Length: 103
Image 1 (cartoon, rainbow, N blue to C red):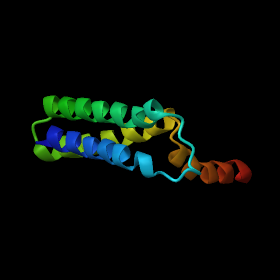
Image 2: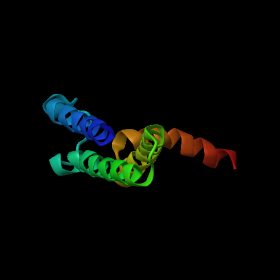
Image 3: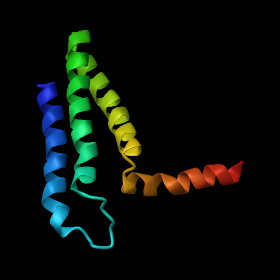
Image 4: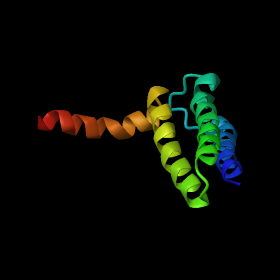
């Protein structure tokens, strides 16, 4: 159940990226197809592993769901940062500039 939900969520994002790829505004720079799908593929794989590990460790469905969701959010966020996702970097840039400016 939980692994299927995680897998379908990640798969839905990947399908959305693939469907919208031809219609992306030409002003948005895309490094290439491989770069575009790298983060969703890494994320989907990581979310499946996280779900399987949580299921092996915990008995309670609530604990499994909570740990899977929390760890998946952190993992996918880190994946987007490490893959240098342009939208995520654009979102955090003003935050980091403000922090650096306040010191």
